[in-house]
Amino acid sequence: MLRWRLKEIMARYDISNIDLAKELDMRPASISHLRNSKTIPSIGGDRLTKLCSALSKLAGKKIHFAELYEEETITA
Image 1 (cartoon, rainbow, N blue to C red):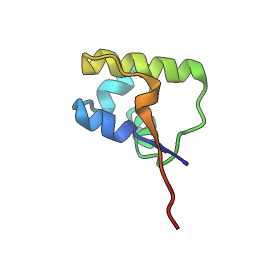
Image 2: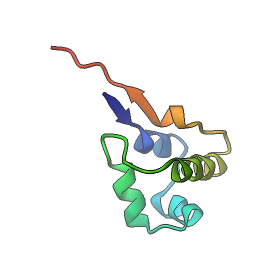
Image 3: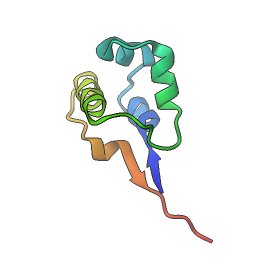
């Protein structure tokens, strides 16, 4: 199972919902919904590319899509 890590990335680089929303021309509430998702939301490749570009700009460091998720091991 893949775990969505947007919340961690935003916290690590001190990126607010408002700042990311401005970069993506979205509402802060939409960013909050994305950030609080536990699993990777169903968004297209173009939006993921824009998300990574906006995060990179705000973080001052290249953020790759692979950093936004991690494989979670389920133990029985």
